[in-house]
Length: 144
Length: 144
DNA sequence: GGTTATAATGATAACAATTATCAATATCAA
DNA sequence: TTGATATTGATAATTGTTATCATTATAACC
Ligand SMILES: [Mn+2]
Ligand SMILES: [Mn+2]
Ligand SMILES: [Zn+2]
Ligand SMILES: [Zn+2]
Image (tube, rainbow over all chains, first blue to last red; front, side, top):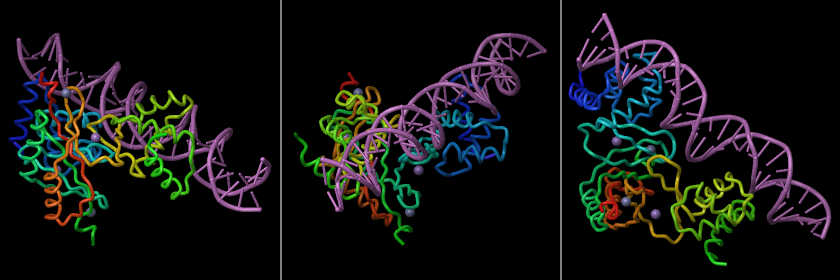
């Protein structure tokens, strides 16, 4: 079974918090890990049901919260619609170019932008902990 | 009466779209304009009711959509919770430092960051139309 | 000014996403 | 093995928002 490291991260988190393991959590975790996409709860729920048809959607909500808590995942919010979850563990920080035509997005990173944000925060005597930068526009494909 | 320019913007929009004027829309517009805050629908609804107690919240939702449509306002989405509306007309573009302790936020602008976003988009052959940058952390006050 | 087509309104139902509740079940330390 | 307690799935409740619809208001036309 792959994803030993990620499972170890989750195990420590569970132990540390006095939680318990469960088959459902394992199914959800592994399905999430093997699907390298920005998934909604519902999309992940549909995928996990193939492996475990009796799973409840509430458990998917709850488990994704845990995955965010232990640093394996992080939330992504576009306009309205449901929250999306992306991989976080051992994935470099990145921001997103969101295409307003097709809905796809491109992952990008710019060290200078990151640095300038720090400078900006310092100017306001603000301790920066994180940020979300969403850039909207039209992607290459959709420009035809 | 103040805000003649903003009212003119709204008037042209209404005329152009074949809509009609109404007392409610005027009340909502003026209350929005005189309140220089990042308001939720509910907050604005509460304020407008002081002037016009019979107003319905649906009309506030509808009118804020119009204000965004004509460029007088724009939406702001933090984590979860309701959408906030801020002034847009004749307000320079800016981004936000959001304090995770007190919930307040600071408006900031950095021309270099803006420029670098353009560069980043161009590299991906992406036509940039706009962006939302939220920076999370702890503000001066909350650091004690 | 009165007529009339049509847009706007407010109440409220419907909806979507999420969280809370709870009885039944599973986990795991002792 | 036992027993305290965490987890589960179903589903009710909640929140924020949009849709519906009968009634009312607006404004172009005469
Ligand atoms: Mn991503
Ligand atoms: Mn602002
Ligand atoms: Zn596209
Ligand atoms: Zn603060």
